Image (cartoon, rainbow, N blue to C red):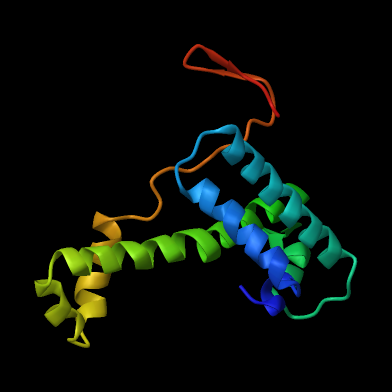
Length: 156
């Protein structure tokens, strides 16, 4: 994701964000993963807040913070959640999907010939995504105390 999309000018910041996303996308349930989720939420919260305080610039975040759904403004919570999904998709699942496809191609050399056919995208790409989806689970955030299957859950 480039500077235009998220306003990230510092390559070290992008590298840090990438490393946190890799922890999240690695099916890690440790305290490190909890901290990575917290970092991601705080990071995108800051990006959306900064975009709200700047004039519209035609970028994705600028459009998100000024957007409307069914005639109402997009809430701050919706802005943050949407941007978290975009970051995870751009930095996590895309890399995971490409890696998985490469592994599949090396495991089955017959697929290489199919890859060389220009029609492979329509014929095979969706099937590769379906068979080896980069998204195996989705995290949820508790926003208020709730009980799920007899287990009490509390917000962070």
